[in-house]
Length: 237
Image (cartoon, rainbow, N blue to C red; front, side):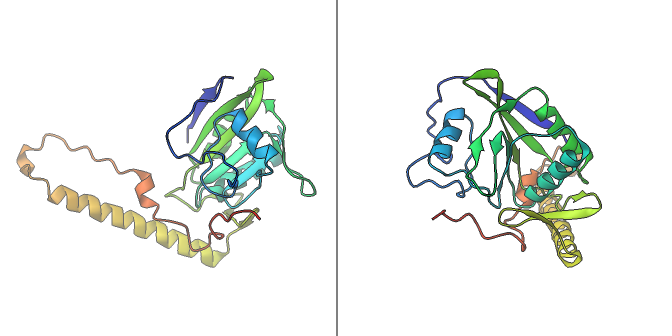
């Protein structure tokens, strides 16, 4: 699935009128969604101690160029696709210490994420990538990988379906997989029924319809958290 790659050049952050997780004193990284688009936003979150991995946020210091790293990233993307979330590359996360910003070379990672999400996940996981350039150099920065909730979930990697708990991923049990696949089929049948009902309400006579183009957004098929989701984002104490 193609990775929609956007590029953010070093510049003063624009003030947006949209309520998109604006940073404030009581803000917590665990409040979803926080959709960082500038290095300043990441720096403020870092200085406030709000960089915390959670059910919807995964941090990576870098994407190592080896098969093991590719497989682990595929599992992360598959697990995030259940309820939606972000994988941010360029944040060094060590269990014993708070996460810190660690800009990475931006040439290559977005393309690798595109290939891994398309070729390592079954079915492919759709992702959107945003490159945030660092003020220190236009060659380095952070890669924000947004993973929308997938109507095709669960996704398989290495013969297993992957879920995400509060901060880590795990393999689904056979029972959980069966429930999720049944849910996916019911959502598809529901969307088909709604579309057929819409066509039946069409006031134009069937013989006069030259063409009908129907589009159903995949997002409409995602009705909410799965039965196996971790609790919704909590405010860090």
